[in-house]
Amino acid sequence: MAEELVDVRAEKFDERGCEPMLLFWYPEVGDHVEEGQDLCEIETAKAAFVIA
Image (cartoon, rainbow, N blue to C red; front, side, top):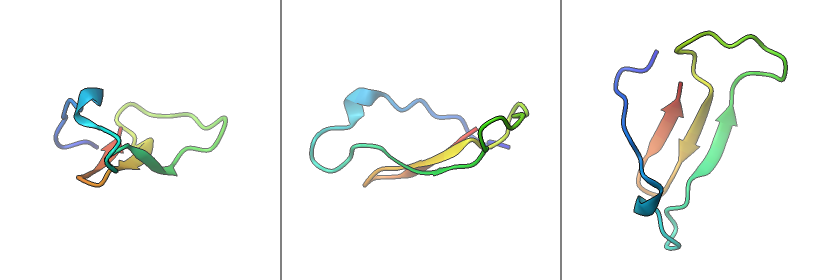
């Protein structure tokens, strides 16, 4: 479950290598997703985020 929620605005990313990239997508197609379950992991040159 997520410990800290952060707001990441699209304006913070530019063309200098900070564009978000999807690393992992956890649920399979058709899976039931529980509230708070990790869905995917996104990485930029500055940070990695787990989306729940």
